[in-house]
Structure formats: structure tokens, C-alpha cells
Amino acid sequence: MPSEQQPILTDRQRHILEAIVEHYIATAEPVASKALVALYGLGVSSATVRNVMSELDAMGYLDQPHTSAGRIPSERAYRLYVDDLNSRADNSPSGDSESYADKVRKRVWDQYQDAAADEWDSLFAATCQLLSQLSDHIGVVVTDEQRDVVIDRIELVPISGRQVLAVLIMRTGIVKQRVMSLSAGVPIAQLPMLTSLMNTRLAGKRLGEIQQYVNDIRTLYEMFDGEYQMPAVEITRGTFLHEYGYDVYWDGVRNVIARSDFAESGRVGAFLETLESRRTLGELLSWHGDHERDGVRVLIGSEIPGDGFDQCSVILATYSFGGQRVGSLGVIGPMRMAYPRMIPLVQLTASVLSRYVEQNR
Image (cartoon, rainbow, N blue to C red; front, side, top):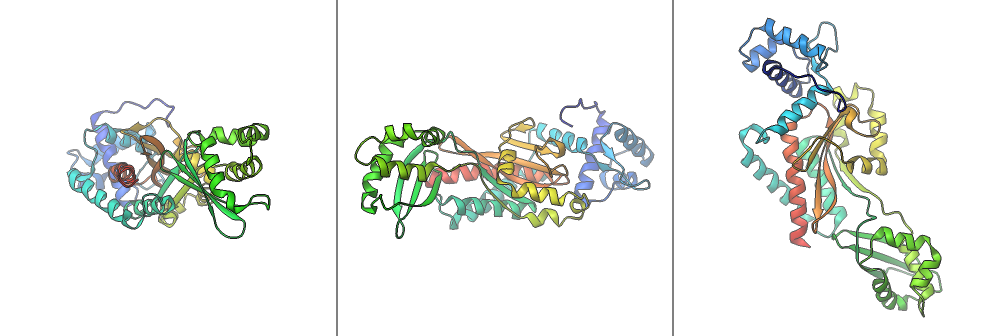
């Protein structure tokens, strides 16, 4: 676990533990010493492997689910495995790094062909779908809480009757929309003038700052002192009296809950409840802690804040628009995931998403 001092392993212990983790990831079956000797060319006898496995068990790196069964990696084993993976100069899979990277980049670009760069729902949904397909886990994208983002401009678009669509375009390129119904005291014909007035007063300010104005009605009236004060206040409150928090997208839940090793943990209900909570998941994916390398964070089991994810791992990378960090994307799956492929997949997807938006803004 992250706060505990990890025991120092010998090279032999480390080598055998790595083989155990990789064998269990590949098979989902408890690992026996004979299988390791037969499949991994460890250069030692089965008896030696058994002794080392007993040592690793005593140090908390292995669990034994049944008395007569082999061992499975513990959370501590996965953490050491991932840290060792990240410490290597090249953590790309199978020594075929350039080919794998090229394939991922091509799939990401192809996925975005039907999603306009300024249609965020479509773009983020496409990203989640791609991550889910390529990882066989849950693909997730979150936009961070938007209080610090700067408003570039505001557009007011009449829809029907007295309904108006308020469109907020952020400096990052992110677009937020809100539909509101105007009172009879706001003529639709005044919308162009009100749009200009709101941009004069509010463009260039941070979203959190504007929300403070909205919550202080006296300040808001002073800001719009003049002929269009009443309708400007009404529309500003209708547009910004709304908590623009986290927007969370995900795809591929069945990929995880259908796995027997995950379903048997008895934590599916808590996992789904957390996944359904937009704020909880947003805070999880925006959480900054240890275990980050090259912009990628890998959280395992008890390292993950919140409830329901204690049998999971989360791999995250941040994406940015206009040089400003906007959110995180990644995959959620059981601890038994193929980290050598998942880490570069998440890293490459975040890089391509950022670059795609920059080129198409």
C-alpha cells in the first residue's frame, strides 16, 4: 500500500514476482511453481521457485486464495510491477513500440473523423468508445471542474417561443450550453444587444468569478447599470446560476463487470454506484497524487479515492487545449490488466486528443 515501506527484494525474487504477475494477468489462474519453471525459463528448480514464492508471500506480495492452490499477486505486487515498468527507458509493449504507437495513433485519428473538433460531447464519447474497444476495459473522459476557466465569448440564440440557448465559449475551446425560458419582460428582439452587453461585461473573466457575481444580486445589478439592466440580469442569472462542474463520459462497463474475477469480489454494486456519481468520478479522475510518470498516473486498489474501486486499477493521463489542462482520460479495469499495453494506450490517446483539437480549433 502507498504509505508502507516496501521490502527490498533480491534480483531473483523480483524476477520471479514479475513472472507471477504476468502469468496471472494472462491466465486469471493462481500460479504454481511448476508452471513458472516450464513457461518462463527462470533457470532454477521448481523447489527454489516454491521457496521464493513462500518468501514473497511472507512479505505481502502474494496471496493464496485456497489452501491447495497456487498464489496470486497482491495489490503490493501490482504496485511494484508497475513501478518497475515505469522505471524502464522503454515501457512500450513487446519491443514493438513504434508499430504499436503508430497503430494507436491511427485508430484515434480514424475514430475522430466523424466527430467535429468543437462538438465536445461527440468527441469525448468517441474517445471513450475507442479506449474501451482497445483496452477491453472502461474508457473514461472527464473535464475538470470549470471554475478557473476563462470565458472567451457568449452567444444567445433564440430557439422557439421564449426559449433561448446560451452558448459559453471558453478560452480553452470547450463549449457549454444552457437552455432557458425568458420572462415576458425580455423581448427576443433585444437578444443581439444583450449579447453584446454581456460580452462587454463578462468576456475575459473566470467562470468562478462570474458565478460569484450571480450569487451577489446587488453586484450584478451594478454591473449592468443602464437601459438593459433587468433583461441582462435575468439572462446572466439564467446562464450562470448553474454549477458547471465535472462532465464525465464513459463506455464499456460490461467489459469489467462481466469478468468472473471481478464479479466474484462482491463489489460490483458499490463499483456501479460510484461510477454513476458524476461528481465522485470527476473528483477521482481529477485527483493528483503519487505514482505519476510522463504525465500518466496509475492508481491501484486502495490508492484510489472513493468507494467501490478497491479491486480495480485506474490509468489516467491529462489532456490540454490551448496550453491549459482541461481534464483527464483513461481506463478503469480490474487490477489484473495488461499494464504494458494500457499505459502507452492512455498516454498516446491523451496526446492525440490534445493535438487533434489544437489543429481543428
